[in-house]
Image 1 (cartoon, rainbow, N blue to C red):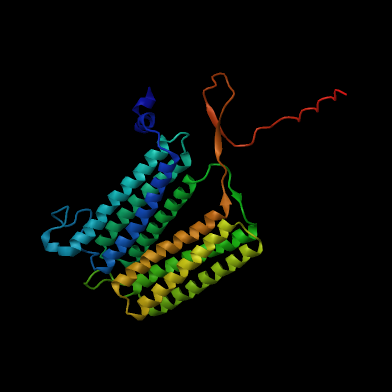
Image 2: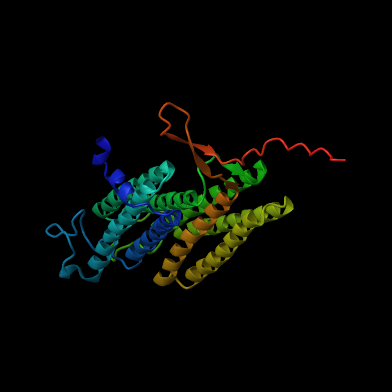
Length: 341
């Protein structure tokens, strides 16, 4: 009885989560991915990047922060502990997706991708501490967190749709314009990490190596890409309106436009007020919202049909296969009754 040794199978026999529960578990991983990004920014903005001076321990003689490390040690260690909280949410998602019948293999696989991204980023976080906040590794740390947020969004989207083959709701040129928008937004996020690596908020009060670039020039390039992304968003909305795309698709573009405008205002405020820590933190939160909004635009342009479980024909008859749901064939129309006259 090999199945009796499988903990996922044991859980599935005793617990059948609803589709709504799986969807909420997926959404929780999205929220936690954003929390990790924002709290990681708080570590840098409070100069707590080396609050724990080694890794995986906090100090050479203690796993947890000591009183000598003060608030900086508590902030850095607290951010490390959030990794375990995120793992718990991802673990709940994997278990729920595995226990749900029929099993959504796509969700469980993507859940495991999230888990290994978390583990990889935890190791990179340790390398950041051991290298004294190397700005290039710090940038990769943020980009991997963005990858985690991306996978979390994919899982959330997949939890609300079927496992059938995707079907485009817009024409191919519109999808290509959307891909261009996604690429420009990724470039915008990448430039944001370069601004961080060369800017004044190094992550620690001590002298820390920075990317040897003029951060104001990089900031200007970053702003230029903001206008590119903004222009592509406006162009996409007009195209969708011209081709009479579904209202839900157009609505996601308007939501993205609103987020971009708000993020632009925050960006200008932080620049002209001397980069105050609180405003920079809000801007980091805004970058997560921008990326989420872009992904929603991308996801809204296609749909996946639900698959129904259909018994396979065979000698045992106890196996099931997944086939697209199709309406039953009503058969030929009945012949009209002969007149009695």
